[in-house]
Image (cartoon, rainbow, N blue to C red):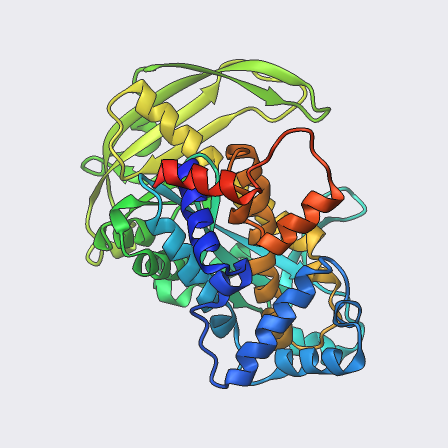
Length: 444
């Protein structure tokens, strides 16, 4: 699948001679044409100096001042910046076949700000740490939160972002503090911060316009009954790591009890690494069972019962040098064999791709090093970094999955010619026009 996608993109690039900037920004619609031109120039400047400061990549004061004006402009938001990329992702989605994984996750961006007025203009995020006794504590720091949905193929090739939500907290309250005042399970989902999972699912499903091919993958934070119901309503699918032991059957027992009585269906061997990077073979016992799951007690009248598949993958022997593998997944997808259960486990393992995307944002683009003063400006900057981070991630994975893909998929003719002059290869490469067009003839 990745090979055919590579050739399709290369074919488009050769015919139109457009750059990747043109493809990603084609559907961008700003309220002022000049803002669109400035955005394109800014994206090129930041891509030429990944991880560098804005003044350094802009090179002169005029461009630097124009960049700062763009980030602080009231007519610019993450929607205008990312709309073009979302549409380009939809195009890449349409060029593929088979199921596509929509990975959802939240990350925090923290900033060092000393002045109270600067802290208030950005907001607060939760941060973990340890006190003198070595116990984990939760405190607040200055920063932003971002919840993103990344579309990837089942082989792990990132197609792009399909939904992004930014927000801040003026005052953070943990779940335990909330429980002292109200039962969180009885609170409407629209009044919870976790509503972002539902918003992203709906936005990405509507954007891609083929819900049956989408599998929304999330960690234990996405174990939300309302999300399961929305997935059914939107006619799409989900694969979630569960942490809630819900009532099952007729309500006399829970999912955990029913799974405990389910027979082991088989075993799966894989290699894992410990904290020292040493690889070892481990064996997982696999269980799967179709179960009637009941909604929370306080929401029985609002949400229906669902027939879902629960998959348990548990390591047989307790390891001494790492945490024991014990995955509990829940999905609306049918699982009728051990092979299908293992397939779903492999799909869930792809969730770590979005962690890699976040790492590129923070370590590569250095999104947390910015000195911009307000949340709105930081959001606009991070939105641009999201496009650049996807591009870096895509090129890395494309090289791994399709090393023989034509260079036109990622580079222009001028860039290829320059590389051919700088790096002399012993073998004839596809960068020559005749070879590239010959390859495309065979594939189209």
